[in-house]
Amino acid sequence: MKASELIAQNNQKRDLLTEENEKYYSNLLLYIRTKLSLSEQQSEEVLMEMLDHLLEGQKDGKTARDIFGDDPKSYADEIISHLPEEEKKNSLKLVSQVAVNLLGWFLVIRSIALLIIGQMQEVDSRVFIIPSFIILVLIALMVSVGVKVIFSLIHQSLFDEKSSDKKLMVKAGLFGAGGFLIIMVASYFIKDFGPSFEFPWIASLGVGAVLVLISWIMKGRKK
Image 1 (cartoon, helix red, strand yellow):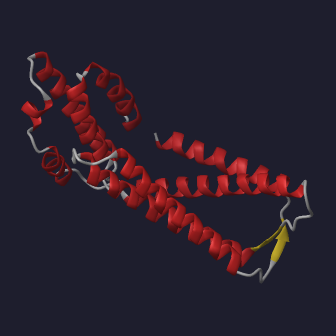
Image 2 (tube, rainbow, N blue to C red):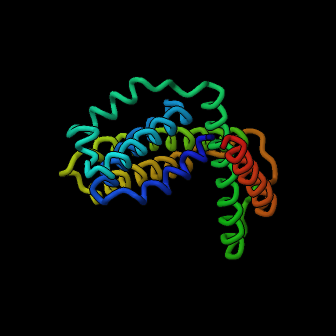
Image 3 (cartoon, rainbow, N blue to C red):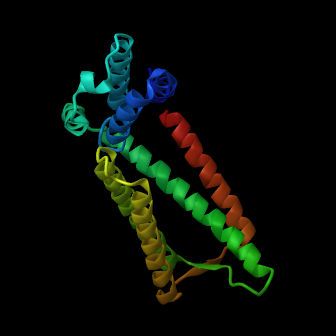
């Protein structure tokens, strides 16, 4: 089965787990899935094998701790050490899909902002190529770093019973707010210069919508 089919089947089968076993297994699943460098196909196959093994054990009255041990993090790390990395072409497809999606939503949001502000005052709809490129690269970097930071926080909290979801959300929120502030400050200080072209809100909305649609098609083909 394809990775997407395995994920759908996994979601259905997890409903059969007891509350205790579901929590234990879900932590393993999230820990492994958020290791983005791993092969998605191989990861989902292993996760399905683990789930089937757990369901069989559950029928005999066993718990996830009985089957996988009292140290789920070490067990997950052992599983990860035997999983292959994602192929470069698949990683490139994922990065491309995310980049197209990000640019599409950026243009959609820009069009909405231009439309709203334009109702109150005259707005300059010109796009300065070089400053805009710098801002887009900065946004991409912040998103990339943000994903790594959030996944790192998740990994730290999954198997820590003392960890609090509220603390995790606060830390992630603070990073997000800090990243947004950096982008806003950069946008303020980077002056408009170099070549430019007119790009009104309707054109921005149209191009943005097309890019979002393309990213969805790319995601569908990937599955």
